[in-house]
Length: 421
Image (cartoon, rainbow, N blue to C red; front, side, top):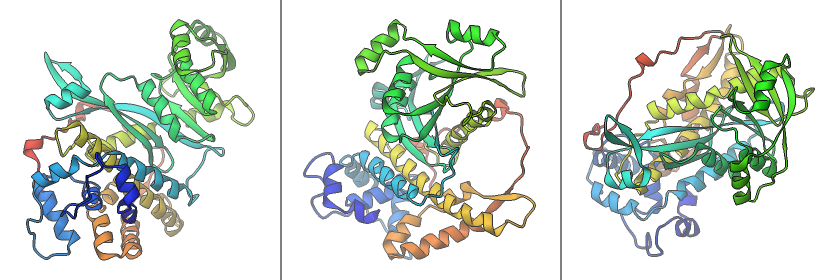
């Protein structure tokens, strides 16, 4: 990856102007990218001093570059560099063929969440926010397409707070493959989005509101639990389809009633029409796997600290998000590889064991920097895998805990009050 960062064509594609990164500097393109990939969470100057101490293999910290110089250098770096690296990394990972599939399909969950941003006029103007107690809180919307089995983020988009999550979901489809099944929560069903999936040959499973349409209300009132229903576009959907160049032909969907342990009934829409290949009883578990993206958002916010930003510009926010997503993917891919060995090592135990991903992410700090500075990629990666193998926890099936929002403490990250380390 570091050699890719040093390639002239890659640099030319992901810099803001042709003259950027053409002179010999203390913070060239590849070093700047490596620093942003190093899980920067503390004060910028402290992080910079620590980073260059490791990079140059020094015993004592020295002031190699200032936070101001870093701030100026990053203005010439496009966040698309990290997105391109993430796409290449994911491609290489899937070539290993170690990801579990559901009936031959890769399962991808799509969902959005909100991010609390630092208070800055530039950020408020671009992202907007939410009014809270007569004050406008600067916020953004983050949408991700997430591989449930591997834990990799296929695509991440940060957008203004009021942007539609359906529109963002539509953008994710360019990063998916024909054999994928995308799983959505109840906020996504719309005829134009169905038509977009049909045009791209993508399957989906979406939860729908029980009052989504009269035909759904009739289905709920009936004794059927599994039916094929034809949907037609309404006026707004026709407009959206025409704007996107999508077909207005009626859409045939399989609609299922799923009984929940709570006594509630959920309604699912799916393009998986073959009831023999995809039995009704499989869909309770299939949709339940969507919870993985909720867990991932919790991990990104509380462990990865994706809301812990290093700057007050729109440029910096997009860089931080894209860089942390890539670092997170590298950690998850390593954990996935290690998990294959864990199964063999603990096969004789009563319980299955899994990698402690939180510890694995912490161990990622300086790992890429050491790989580059020492030129020992394979040895250090194997050492990292060995560390993961020794940090596992038992999986005890059947355990559940009552979800209590009263226990949730919202973490805030202030630019002016960053921790020293």
